[in-house]
Length: 238
Image (cartoon, rainbow, N blue to C red; front, side, top):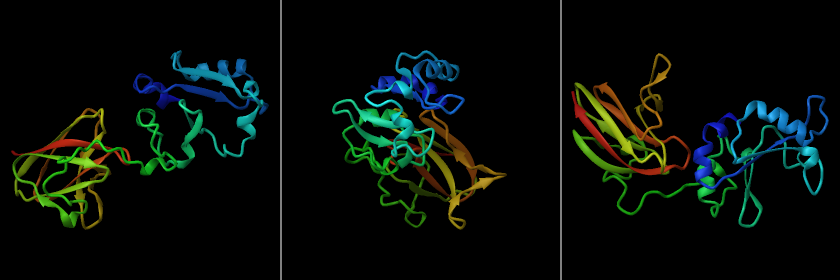
């Protein structure tokens, strides 16, 4: 509920609408809509895109969510496509929060496996000239200056061969996908960590940058599985 509330403007702009269903009251009995509205309103605002109901008042069969074999854990989220009223996505099929913005924008895609859906925001010619560079062993050398590339549903690797300090900046359209950039530890086969913190930049603004020193593998990846967006990558010696 917090996730939906925090992103309700974005979801609404994408055409999504939500119904929060309260299944049981505090005694474990099927909740009616009065109870659902009272309890759910404590935890959510008054957004016009969110309706609140109780499971005992749903039609055509009261208590359907509490009894349905389709719902095996709570909280759950089930997506219904408005064009044909078919269930087409289920939170239980994903290891992450469902990306309701992307789902609402691309309801025509097969969302039976949400974590593997790739949205192609990479037109022809987007990929960097060092492709294929999806593994450290394939990484091309990143020279000082700016290159154009694309994170097109997977990760990209680059090598920096500078002895001194440098800054790396990644710029992209965050409306297409949220991209992150890291230093990659090829010997440990994971993102490099120092004192428990990942080395890199992984915000939400469309611009990521950090400073580092010495030879390194650099990894660019979408924050959400399957995300894709063109980017520019700039290496500046310091």
